[in-house]
Image (cartoon, rainbow, N blue to C red; front, side, top):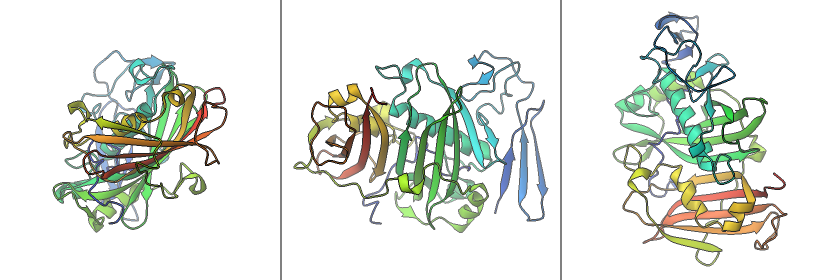
Length: 371
């Protein structure tokens, strides 16, 4: 997809009561000496935009493992021209419907067990989606917004993310991320991802998300304008990263003081947690959710899946509370010290002063000895 639904650090915030409420361009990349743009009409009146990049630009040092491009840069004897490297960091595959980017897991992206954290995975998904938008040719004057959206002061906001992790990559591993988009009903868009181990080519993570449009000034949701729909439809790909039966679409229960097993209060957003709209970036919420998870679970278990339902936005001046309850899988019994069984946890992130919901979440855990 294009400029739609980029999981950016920008438009991941939601108004109150969220849950109650053909400019067709084909983009392709090839290795050539110069950057050129060619447009031609086809029989369906669709405009095919061909972008040739990766020119004989400057030489630069870059990380490289077995000749692969890492962290978004084409590495080897030549690098992208300086005019392209800020936007065309990956490549389009499958006739421009899928955007692909490669990353190496850095030392500052791992946890105590030297594997990537859930926050790292979410950040990589965001980065790939944003570069998909930038490279598509539809980007307007804001992150993730198309030109028609920018004219209307509109942005994409995420309402739901579900991620399933088969294996967490280790420090120094190289991963390859594919992303694409499709319609989700009349007024929403779905963005999916898969993450592969670059060595084994095995899919180790799958994720899906749903997006709607918000006016960036009024902070109110709105329908997708027809002009925007015409921009993004040519990038739709009818493919699911996660089968519908595995997508945990059942309602996440709301925790209360009585039903929560643990409550952590006084969580305060920092300036570094803010995005370009001075709202908390969506990945930051994961860390606060985990603040109320028992330490022995964090030490002995891996999170194998997580579902986040975003309810409203959060600002730096807000104080938050994190609530969690944990149960053994398929049982109503509370967790004890035995980690041989899978665990299921329910979470709530809310305002400290008025208890207004920010995020509901559900996660599944498995013993590291089994995973």
